[in-house]
Image 1: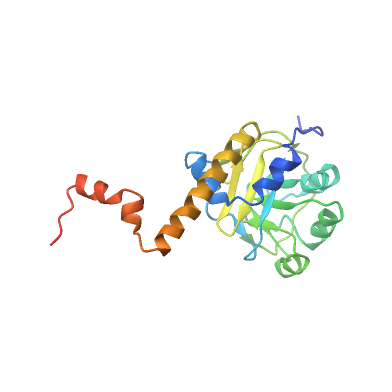
Image 2 (image 1 turned 60 degrees about the horizontal axis):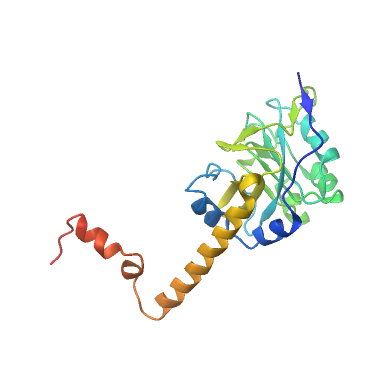
Length: 222
């Protein structure tokens, strides 16, 4: 039976604010190289970023009815995450973009296509998808909102942190948010220090201990 859950446990505002300074690739590394959606889910225009708690949606292929419902129940800052089962339809366009922005929704991630790409870009609304498709959808089938879904080959639970930029989208489990934030901040600080040493003339082979790796693997050179 189709079902909508309205109450979602979200990470704290301070945690979310700090995650906005973290690169998705950093979070992916800290998560043990997990949590990254498939690489074909990308922003529809360069330079966009998204960070916020997930509102998860399952749509019937070629049907965007549940996206309209999700816009109605989402809170400011939420990121809509939808599994749609088909790329040959534009599940989202300028009309839903205007509706979402009016409610303060933070962005959209879906494993299908959208349309009205130029208009969405002009309005500055963050959308991550597999591409653009002008084909329309129907509004017939009821499904689920705020249940666990698989999007981009990653499990997404309601309230998980969605972090996206030009590299793609990473999912941070809400129950590990503070742990992953701290480790991500430490990693980025360490990388900043490393880059200063690189500018000063050191090599990545030295700083990462890769000379020893090459030697252990028997690399020969003349």
